[in-house]
Image 1: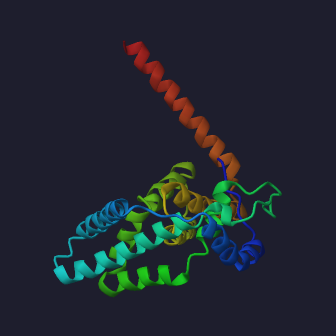
Image 2 (image 1 turned 45 degrees about the vertical axis):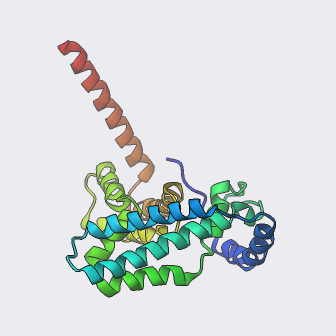
Length: 239
C-alpha cells in the first residue's frame, strides 16, 4: 500500500512562514483568472452541489436550508479559489525531511493548501453547527469526502476481522479527524492524500498495540486472491 510522505511538523512550520510572500510573488507573475462566463458556470455548479447536499438532509425548513446552503457554497468557493490561485510551485522543491525523498507535486500542493486561512474552516464548522445536529454535520462532511470514513473503516474490519471495540474507536477517531481536515482540500486526490496520513497513523497504532499490520494486510491480499481464483475455477467448471 503506497503511503503519502508525511511532512515533518517543523518543516511545515518553516515553509508556512515563507509561503505567503513567495506565493504572492509567484501568482503576481502567473495570475489565475477566469472569463466571466466561466466564473458564473463554476459558481452555479458549486451552488447546485450545496443545494443537493442540503436537500439530502430533508430539513423541511426553508430558512435553515438557505443558511446552510450559503455556508457550504461559500466554503466550497473559498477552497476552489485558494487552490486555483496557489500553485504547488509556491512551495520550493526540496526533500521530505523524514524520508529524504524529493517532495512530490502532491506534497507541495498539500503544503500550500494547508496554509489556507483557518477562518475558512472555522466559518464552515460554526455555520453548520448553528443549524444542524452533530449527526447532520457529519453527513455533510461525508458528502465532501464521498463517504471515505465508512468505506475505510470497512476496509480495516475486513483486514482485521477480530478488531476490538477499543481499536475500532481509535481508528474511527483518526478517520473522523482526516475527514474534517480533508474538507479544506479541493479534489478527491488531495482528499485521499489527507486520509493516507491518518491511515498511516492507524497502522502505526495497530502495530504499537500488538498487531502486525504488514502480516495482516498480506494475509488479506492472499485470501482475496485465493477466493477470486476459487470463484473463477468454480465458474469455469460449471460451464
